[in-house]
Image (tube, rainbow, N blue to C red):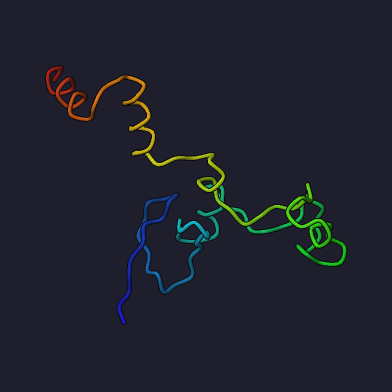
Amino acid sequence: MGVDFLVCRNCGETFPDCGNFVRCECGNSWCDEYCAEQDGFVYESCKLGFEPNSEQCQAKYYSDTCRYHIMTSCSYCRNEKFEDSELLDYALKLLNKTKENLIAEYQNKR
């Protein structure tokens, strides 16, 4: 049995996958709760302060349609943040250029 090392989405530090770390259902991970929170990760909760799906929580009765219910998610799941590679691809399309075109232009300006 081996240990894999992951890279924290927030601070960039590496950490083992066998320790205490936070992982979103989408696969993103952070070294600890602080970094996860700083990067926009939230656990399932109720905006009214009730325990999710408890008797007091409306989500028990209205499922995901409850306006006070917050699902476990991160800023990447919610499309609030994006990978640099995604943004680069989008920018290249806007510029109507390929990565090779951009590299050639950058090399000529140096």
